[in-house]
Amino acid sequence: MAKVCHSCGKGPAFGNSRSHSMVATRRRFDPNLQKVRVLVGSAPRRVHVCTRCLKAGKVIKAV
Image (cartoon, rainbow, N blue to C red; front, side, top):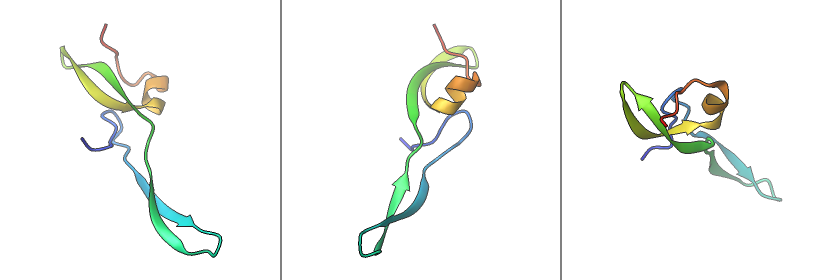
């Protein structure tokens, strides 16, 4: 499963880790995704949603 938000499509960002000697190695910043039961159409489904979308109320949680 890809680390992508179902609601907004937010995925990982990439950057560099810098050691003490300033050697750059690639790293990734993963979004804070939670597995939530969400109403997709009329049926509930378990999808990955970022916490920003959950807090903003962009998804309707299934009961």
